[in-house]
Image (cartoon, rainbow, N blue to C red; front, top):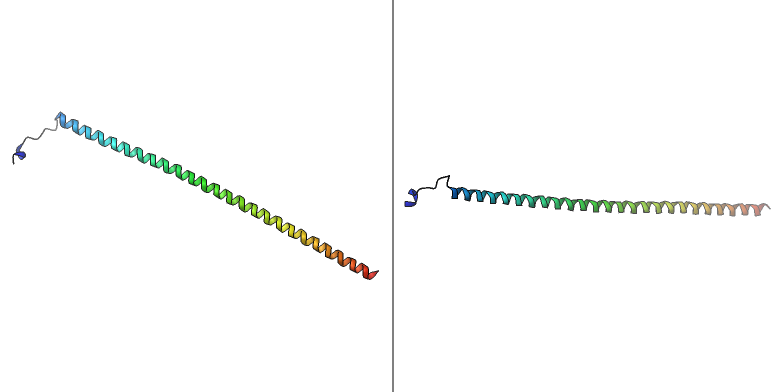
Length: 105
C-alpha cells in the first residue's frame, strides 16, 4: 500500500531523461543496423540475380550456336545428297546413252 502513495518522479528528472535518451539511442542504432542488413541482403540478392541472368543468357547463346551448327550440317548433308543424286542420274543417263549407241551401231 505504501508503494501507491510514494512520490512519482517528475518528468523533468535528469536521470529519467538520460535513461530515456539512452533507450532511444539504442533503438535508433538497432533500426540503423537492421536497415543496413536489409540493404546488404538486397545488394547480394541483386548480384545473385544478375549472375543467374548472365548464366542463363550464356546458356541460351550456347544453345543457339549449337542449333545453328546443326542447321549448317543438315544443309551441307542435303546439298551432298542432291549432288550425289545428280551424279547418279548423270551416270545412269550416260549408261543409257551408251546402250542406245551400241544398239544403233
